[in-house]
Length: 306
Image 1 (cartoon, rainbow, N blue to C red):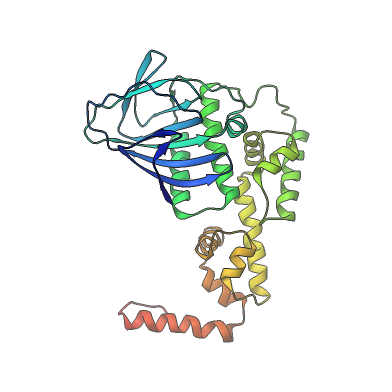
Image 2 (cartoon, one colour; image 1 turned 45 degrees about the vertical axis):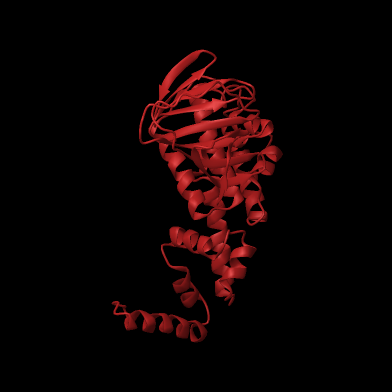
């Protein structure tokens, strides 16, 4: 994660900005504002689209002469050349997640380029999805999961602002939904490491939000969960074939690093990756490594099962 100095293209000298994740046309920033109480900004505007979700504290936001006090149950979109002004009332500052979006990304994620200027009250489901995105980015996730989490969050907020935005005029036939699911499965199974969410949605002729929502409703799991199931099954097969270099295996399957592979494997199977390597691999070669780890733990006074 890196530091930033701009909110979109607007300088933010009184804030600590940490870039949590980036993809073409999108950047997710942890915006920790340190402005003192009573600070009243001037009207300013950006040149980008954005979505801001407040996590802690609050402030007064005024757009085109109309204002509202916003807090952790609120979100708002930003549009190019739309003026806004902020006034901070609390001494403890505030913290937000700011999404910078290009015009094409805003259209793809929010359904079209028109987003409301008025604040949007979130739901508990949106609040949870928002925090899950932040935590996942801090831990480290791959591009496909980042794209899907971003689509679900931005799409849910846009749908909250304008119900039916993604579902109006959409076919709801079972045959259409089955086609979406089967073609998505085929694309992921064919190349689980290199699958691209945006390319997949374009090939299916639907928005990313629609593909993600339909897949989850029909299968009971997200696209990322299905992709991880495929990648974990492939990893187990490689381990059973004697593949021992976990770093190379992680890269071959499109994981961020070995720890990312380990988290996904344990979350999927309930077992540690090193234990599975022992159970499925050449035990005569793996066992000394595990025994060495046990010896180190015992030397430190830890209780280690035999």
